[in-house]
Length: 408
Image (tube, rainbow, N blue to C red; front, side):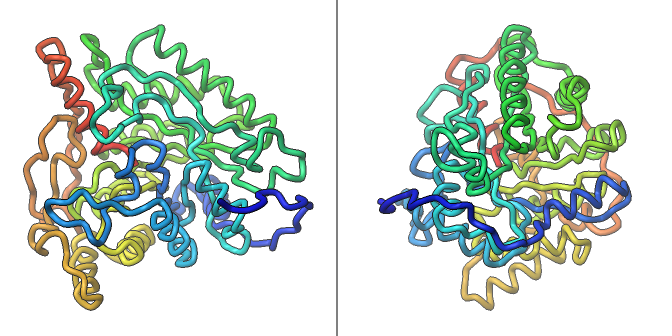
């Protein structure tokens, strides 16, 4: 498909381009009051979904399930790299091979390539037809670190610079000692291999996906406690460069950020929701201490990805507030001749379902009550349903809807 993938590999002297990720992380760690913010685009959906991973095609009609092709998906990545407003692009190992190793798109860009380094069973979404999300997450890795770093089974030392040296590693704790032990053993093995090979990672910690009759009473505290306990035994050389977690609200975010100044905390985007959902989450998460946001579906399902990213960057850099960004985004869509998915007044609503754990889309709240100089939000722990009263089919559907909102 590509011709000879490895024409006489030589030690290529890459153009010296400082990565914005490295510069920002250095400043954030040196000064807790630093306002720098890392923005990442997650284009790794092909490791979770089936044919729908690239998102809706512009030719998608109401009665037709028309989706972009993988080639179109990767073309969007090329355009986002060229735009230069994100700090990281997260990809699958196969997209990394195509764009980082073969096309060398990142060599002269300040954007950092990253790869999903594991694909645990709870992200095997199979377009809604699978039943994996209704079962406790199991650790699994398709890609090897060498394949991520150089595209083949074993890398020579000089070849490790060809691909990505940063990856996402994901864990899900389910309040079960046997299951969580397996998760931690797999993470331990990954960390040791990564440190030996000079591979960095950021840690994604999902909410429990299938606790059965033993769900934690407070999901936010459960996740926070597992994070700090897990990292307590890890020295700086093996630690993640930042965290990617669900946003559980101001109190949970502040508690985690305050606990350890050496840990940079980031949020995952979750479901597409309204435009205000996306903008407000970033704005509020930063207000309470987050310094990274990794958005996948929110970007991929937007009407015009480059314009949507531009407003994410303006919000991240404290140049505009969420409601104003929604209005400006709609105005830009009009100039581009693109019809918004929702009327402006609807896109200015906040959807409770964007961050809830129930199976419904939730109610809407006016943006005017939540943006600008809004009063501090009250944190309420997410409540799990009573799994003991649910049929297996209902559990599967609950988890499927939940992952549609969470996966980034």
